[in-house]
Length: 447
View: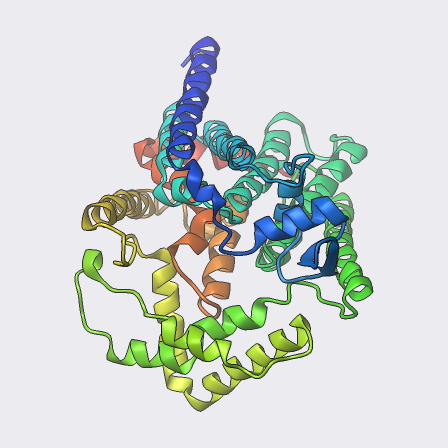
């Protein structure tokens, strides 16, 4: 494909994404009025008072670490002069983030594989049901997906591109350090969107030691720079919480509840007694008894103490029912990656089947890729495959965290674009798969 054709193809994909995502948001803009995770109220409180917190009275605010700060901060920028966060403003933000996610995914596939793979990737990411649905809700999935793809794009753009174009150790030291600093910054932003990404950063930053056209010393310095930038962002959030709340909370004051939601007697009993059902007719756990019981819990003096109490309740359940805990881990892992959503009130069988079939096709394409290209994916090419490590580490992170904490298919939203890239390589020949995307990465400097 010529450069001119490739250019117009990329324009067509972006326009396709803009129309599809924009159309879905217009059709469901009223859904953005809901505030299931209190991001709206935190954002409007921040805009009115300058405090990341919950409202107290008419003008006051109580600082909180109940939610990570980046998403409510972005929403607060959309609050108008009378203190209102309009649905249209949230829709525009989500629309832009969604289109960026499509573009990052498309460009990664184009750089690593081919224009054909890039087109298929762009279509899959644009039409992804979870990403489309979550863009119509005031929740973090849309931002999280954009940030994860920004990290992956930067990784591929800097390390893969430099390895192709410049000999070992001839890349500017400043350029290499800047690349690592930006990587640390992007990972820090992802962490401020979802603390889960702390694990991803812990897996990804050490890989800087093995990528890029630099000698061992320079790679070591780059690793340190990325780690320091990321740690500074985590530290700044922790210090803010120590100052504002009186506790050095590095993540959120919500983790205990999330752990308890997936590890309580009601959920374990449901897993023990649930009947077999077709994937499109599988009922979800009825959490109302748990919510009612949780509402009756002994009141704690603050959100930190309440979070600690939730952790203790979850740990008690796990210790008292260890076999059910192990079983529940497998269930949560399966729920994270299952193609069909659960049958819930208001969700039609037709929509469940449509969503499930989309992901069944994507999963089948991924399985085909893993089998058809198994030689290129073998461990002996581990050094070359480091360019794919952000995607691999992301899947490991989400699987590990959400097998213990609460899990459902929407939790995998940040990984769906990278899975779409893998699925799209089903349209790539074995020769191209082995050469363009992998062999070029071997130009990294020898130790």
